[in-house]
Image 1 (tube, rainbow, N blue to C red):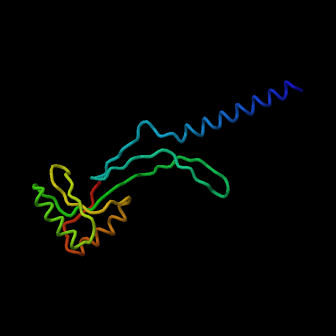
Image 2: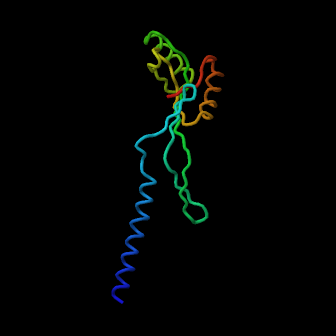
Image 3: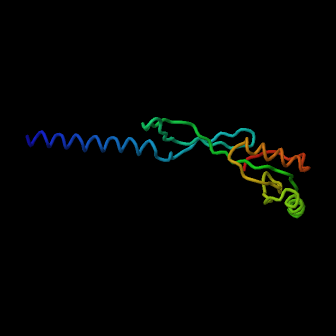
Length: 139
């Protein structure tokens, strides 16, 4: 009887260790991530997402993307010209405007968006305010 109880205990401990090892190794942050570049938008492939459906928890691998984009209003060779333009843009758009050094130019940008769809909505507003050359680019 004692041997049977001991074997059952070993089996339970083994199952707990095995399931916890599988669970934690599948949710670990990968040492490397895959990065794709579409035009000027960087897209990074994430790891695993845990979902709950009808009181059962399933773990499946989904591709999720972390995309950060901004709306660029203008680009200048001179920082002072960019800052002058940024102060005028701030008055018109009533939003925080940044001057960023990007691809050898001083760029005037506004907003940080997690999806291109949201950025497109704001881009339409920006263009309606007179910034017809504005476009979306990666953050």
